[in-house]
Image 1: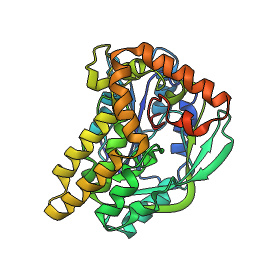
Image 2: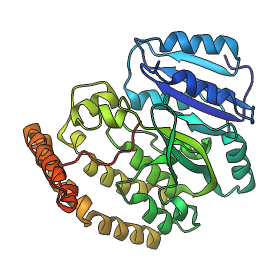
Image 3: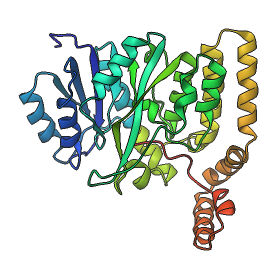
Length: 332
């Protein structure tokens, strides 16, 4: 039972995260802004994750630990953290990422200062397994701060890019209007685009979110295999052909999001045209063609990857970029 309603909720979905979860929790507890709750949803971990989380929850009443009776898949677990949250502002946190101490203070202030903004996103520092910062950037999100929906859509629909805005501090009532994270690979691409249709972003020009790249990360260990990726998202081996075609899913859901959230007829038509132009880019069109073929016969995908690696070893980037890939690196 929740005895106090905190202004900010941080949702931490996790499965077998003993390697970094203590660091993630510690970074939340070190926040200079203290009116928050941390909701941890353990997806049936089999390592020391439960022990670590329960120990932390016993030490701080702002931490609520929930353990699913079975692995629901990542998509449902992300949803569950949101359902359990109570705050006015909400943020997901991956178990292997870290927040700078001023993260909540700066982002809450930005949203309070700009009531027309739906989320606050700081600069992002890419860190390695040891926590060393390798780079800092915003991946071109400046245009997502525009009051014009078409400019935001143009910035967000493009990929490959990192969809860091899914890990931004978001107004809970706005996030509730979206489809959250759906049970298919790269559904964070859809969520980021949908958020852009609902309102403008505000950028905080400080590297306050540290996104960890390491060998066990989802995009390194699972995303390269579409079947394994699908199991990770929904904990099921059952898949339709469309479920193995993330680029098709992204375009169809973007079309639905436009119809759902954009009321002005002329603005909708403009966005449809922009989406069509995006479909006809070399990157997107090649994946729309390749994905159904490789989904029908995984051996083709593996052969394509071998060709891609061969081309990369011979330094032919233009051809290698058009090879058979698994889509943008966006998930944790």
